[in-house]
Image 1: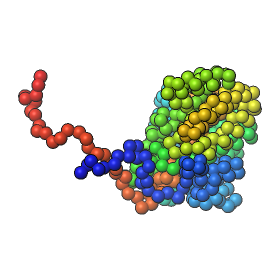
Image 2: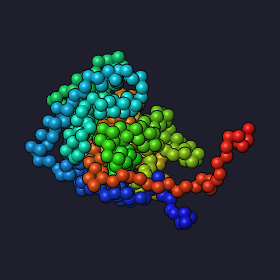
Image 3: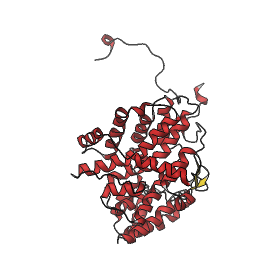
Amino acid sequence: MTDNVKINRGLKGVYFERSAVSDIDGGAGALTYRGYSIHDLATQSTFEEVCYLLIFGELPSADALAGFDARLRAARTLPPEILDIVAACKNGHPMDVLRTATSALAALEPASQQLGEDAFIANGIRLISQVPMIVTAHDALRGGRTPVAPDPDLGHAANWLWMLKGEKPSADAARLADVDFILHAEHGANASSFAARVTIGTQANLHGAIVTALSTLAGPAHGGAAEDVMKMVQEIGTADKAAAYVKAKRAAREPVTGFGHRVYRREDPRARHMRDGVRQLGQEMGAPEWYEILQAVVEAMKPYARHGLNVNVDFYSGVIYQLHGIPMDLYVPIFAIGRMPGWIIQCIEQQRGNILIRPLTLYDGPAPRAYVPMSNRPA
């Protein structure tokens, strides 16, 4: 009977639910949020507007966006106990600290226990604003600095850079951070979003699902690519060594970090916007060599594009963070800051007509056998 069961390892190619949020066409290399091209959103929209679009399903009017933005800015507060918790585990990895602090928010804010779509939206708006505060507070405390208070006059991305670095970012740097968050905001049933849906399937609250998502994102197979790319760039050192590096990796049948994607068979549509950002920020920061190394790797990898090994969005993200002087262990938390609205709407969708997600595993262990008492087992 079980001989005819097809195993889809990793649930590859399995549709488990319908979603009206993002559409990924891996063959064409296309991505839309709520029907809008990622290219239009990356070049014309803001992260706040994309958050609204993902959560509510439509682009906002000017008044609606202003009201939503006001709610985000008003939510830039943390219970004082959270800072105590962050300080107590300041020597931990930033993702562990972020997960722990997010879990503590569920215990410290009674509204986090509420279910229902309105409650998920309200809690989600708070979390979108609180997560970057936790990340920046931890980085300050572990460095012996006082956390920087949020600036109510700055937008989401600019305020994040302000809290992290203690200096106002340039308009171009703030815009690039904004685009980075937009590009990472949502991406279908990826591992962390699916994990969040599984949690909501048990009728858990939003904070519990976000903790699940954070735990899943922390795994290097999901959220660690940007950090790995930066390590690769540092290992290569100069653009003239890129071709030899790629040749050695391919000869050893080892992957070149930042190329290939579980979904896309052509270039990740998000990559072009980060590529332009690296070039511009590198010039602004007086460090164009990082971009030159990246492009030399891209050139060396061109012969393998026909095998689906095209550049993905994470190939460029790490260098942008490096140019800002951001520690490598913050790269995944930055991913989490951008992905917050995607996780939230995935949880809201799951809650509508909710069902417990319970796949099967095909047993291939021993056949039924008799229990052997301890006295009869071999010594």
